[in-house]
Length: 176
Ligand SMILES: [Fe+2]
Image 1 (cartoon, protein in one colour):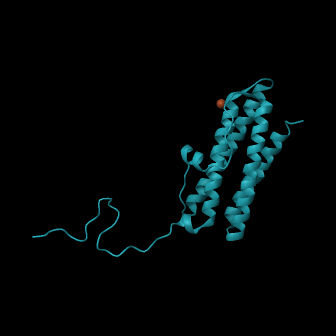
Image 2: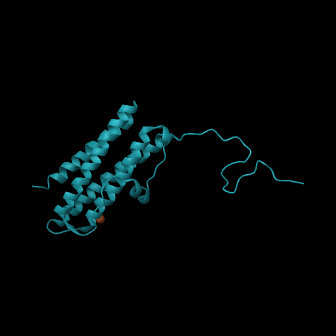
């Protein structure tokens, strides 16, 4: 007697043979443009945090301690902003991709130099990246404003942008 059922799971374990296909369920990530914005900003923010720490660890030369401390101060603020961005994502029922590996795959920032540099060298490298991060925040804020009436996400991005612009001014003030 043939005991094979037509309702068994296939080898990949992914579908039931003989059953109608389940309706396609779009995830919140796919349906909500705010999540895309937050994902990109989290990837950029985590990448920038590691780049600032690289500067903290490899700065050399005159005024070492001032740069060393400044870069740690920048990293602490970035860590707090990353946390706010990730938690806004989950509050909106989106997923979070917060590992270093995920950030490295998605970050839009350029790679950071790994050799030891002077404080001025690091400041110049960080200005480029902070400018890019500020532009991403501005574009994200525009996107969220255009596609939702979500004043909380807009307020969060505006607050982070205010802080990033302030840090960009602090970095730029080291340049003659
Ligand atoms: Fe340290």
